[in-house]
Image (cartoon, rainbow, N blue to C red; front, side, top):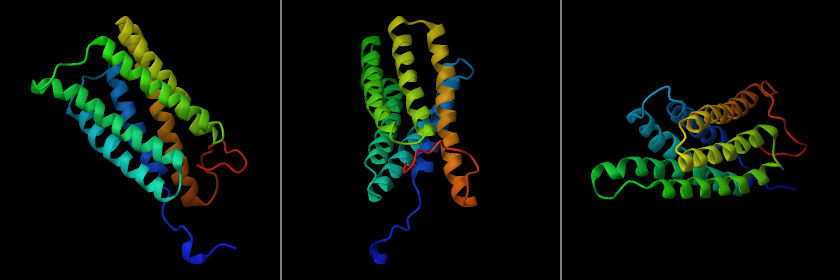
Length: 196
């Protein structure tokens, strides 16, 4: 029998992490698709919402004992901050911009990391599987686009990234609305016994 003094009454941090990831991913990939220019808007989202907010969500998942959520949100939060550093630090003159091979290696490592997490999502709900599956595809397309310097592939990656980000926003919205209404407003495709 559980001890009521140790019941978890803390909020679900996953929607915060998913929104930080999803909204920032959409905005960066609207740029990658060639629709808007890179600007302080995207970079600020990368530092503060995609970055810091996701790290906070990861730390809250740690308190809940959720290893997957901790690793995913904390890692992708720092990914966004690293990406902003890659864009901004060379402009200071303190260090050179990464060459093509470096960016391909960077994106490939993140794709491998995401593929490992995707395998973990096979025990979770369908919405989470779509987020991570489409993110694996996004990293592959971004790496391929940089390796080939093919603008069509980079633009395709942008559109695929918009889908990936939108799938994360959907998963966040479903968790928020389903909790508020106490019923399934937006389906997550839960497996029996699956967590968020």
